[in-house]
Length: 223
Ligand code: DX5
Image 1: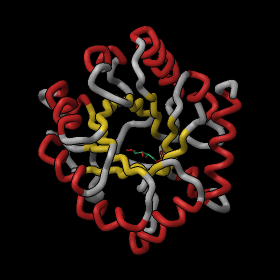
Image 2 (image 1 turned 60 degrees about the vertical axis):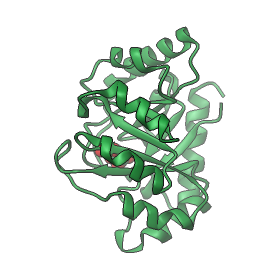
Image 3 (image 1 turned 180 degrees about the horizontal axis):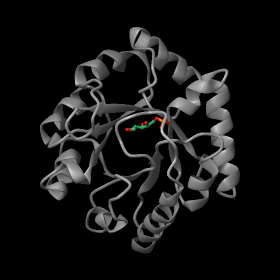
Image 4 (image 1 turned 180 degrees about the vertical axis):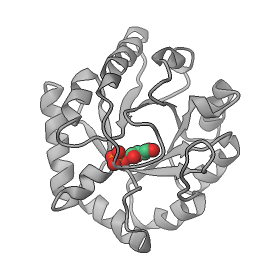
């Protein structure tokens, strides 16, 4: 499977957000990840469904919402209406995670469970039949530009083993500190979708970054 490179819509030029979306699509990104933060679940605030909806008509790329908000259930239908086809919610942020993943599917989107670094991988066990993607955070959520937490690699491998043992068709995505020096470790551990923010923006072009990161991931995965 060809590794997917997903820009994090965090280090964007907020005064020219739409232009960044178009440039990222031209650069070959596989989809865009919108980092929604409420200042409660994480100590940062970004944007909500209305901003995502404004960018939806500008590109044909898939949109995934990474919801870093407490009790995010109410936002699910708004994110679907805004044009998100994958909704990623943190298991730590909800009172009834199983019900929320069911609700995301019922709303017509693909559901994804996100695990912050301290959350055991066992938390995915009872929802693998409900989700299409597992997001393993390789930083503590809330900010871009943090250092990759390499001790998450055994967790990635354990998630891969659980998914394969159960015969599930579930992607593993990693997010946080993913760049040219770290993507290989995550890919070798079993991730196939890679979110990159600050590292991608450091390349001379989005196209160069997407191509380089995808190639590094493919080589590490034995592709
Ligand atoms: C963190 C965000 C991530 C991340 C991406 O809360 O969810 O998307 O910061 O930015 P980098 O790649 O700079 O870590």
